[in-house]
Image (cartoon, rainbow over all chains, first blue to last red; front, side, top):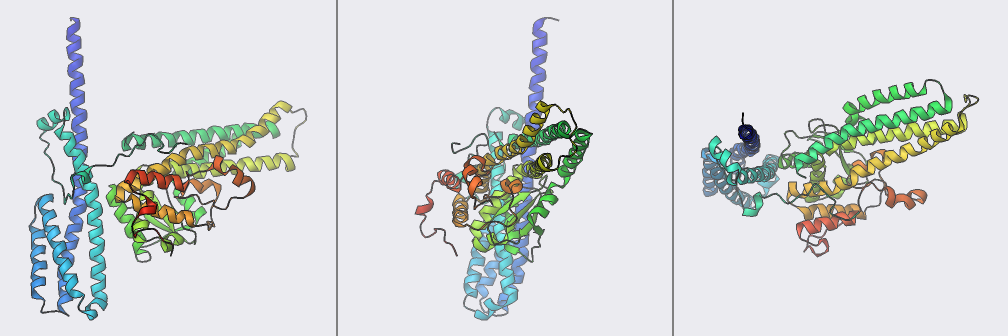
Length: 192
Length: 311
């Protein structure tokens, strides 16, 4: 066989290896994003499960604040019907606003605020919100990495062939949010 | 280096550390054999091998018993457990590490154990009393950073191995000076001098390894904390508070010093004070705060209304 045949074979083999490598990397990033999303999803579900209990607790003391109850319940329905991170994010924001009003209303009822059940629910909700925020950070960072990879050459080619699609962010507040800060693992920032 | 490379390098270093430890022990064994004769080399090497094997799997438990870190439940310490849970979620860990508490008024925290699955995060009761929610979360995120970067196994191994090298060399030296009744006649004096030199050098080498492992990793974990919480200011405030504190950790010792977020050996006196710059396991808190300020683009002294305050 002439030399150039060997060269061609070598190039083809290397290209195939590269495709496999990139493909696997994208699959791994995609799986991380999926896992990140499931962390958010669990907490969103927990939040929407807490809402009826909270509404019941407040109703016991402030039954006539109907408008606020309706808002909260509507937000909960939106949360349950949302499909995909972007919609879920919108619904979650709506729920936050409605819950904010519910808590503002409950300020006027000292007995309600003093009730153990109400305090416990409020505490649970705060924890859920903190966890959503934490999970959101990880998810958005992963999605940012993943989307950047599949949008830029040369990975773009493999992504198109392999049917990788961009993923939606969840409650992205600023474009910079998804980006990782530049953590440099190679050196000491201070002179030593 | 990326996170993946850091993780790989930590894994390799863990293996190398155990190997180095083995070699140091062979050297100690040879030194003891030169001094006393007998089967010292084989016996010491054998014990060292078993100990290394044991510490590979049990370093977390060993450190927990040395430091007095006990397992706690979410009911006992809801804020701490939540901080650990949230930092784990934000760091993308698959599992929340165990949470432990050390009953000690001195504020400090550390992480130890093996893989992220067996690692744990420990905080002192003093830390819990001193830090506000935001600061506590930043400190815990620093420790979760160690877990995520896979520093914990390497640093825990260093703790249990360095400790025992110092202990054994110390014992052998005491024996050489005070108790050495079994010395054989006609022993080669050069061999004996080399043996003594080795026993003196072994713990110094061990401490050198320990230092080289921890200093850079502290900066890294600070950066990881900022990345996990998105709040470098919170960590800077927490470090500032730690700096103001002068209490000394009760269970502090040289071997585990590098595990903590801040060096637990505060009140150094005499020799140790003179050598402290040389043998510090941690960069100074000022340098770390400064590096966080640079990263987050703020000045701790100029934070409006958010300046850290001691309770």
